[in-house]
Length: 123
Image (tube, rainbow, N blue to C red; front, side, top):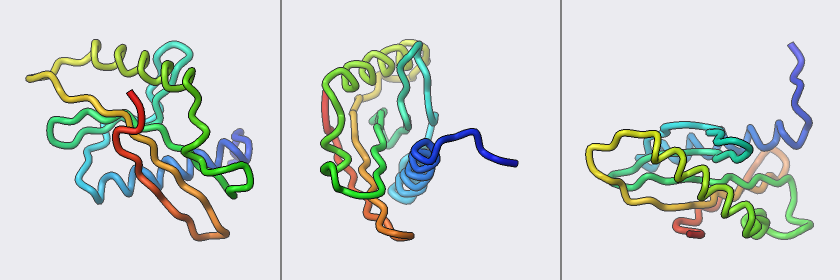
């Protein structure tokens, strides 16, 4: 079966899967991947202790145009925040969670990659 995804989308999906594996090894519980709220999407929603963490994954095949984590616009931050509000409003929590917005940056170098996790990257 062939994929309908572009190479860029395939790279993004690969990065999100690597990010999920990384988060699980760090004790996070993955709640949702690719959560959509209208036109907005959150790559990964996870939980660790009382923190509900909304994660944007930025994956690149090179750093020719800068580090991936530098390419999150203020509009993207606003879109993620709005989607996060819709997600939390739709859930029933025993107690209100603490909310955090993280970025996971992945840069591939051939078959190898470098992952960086930026906690509390924006508000």
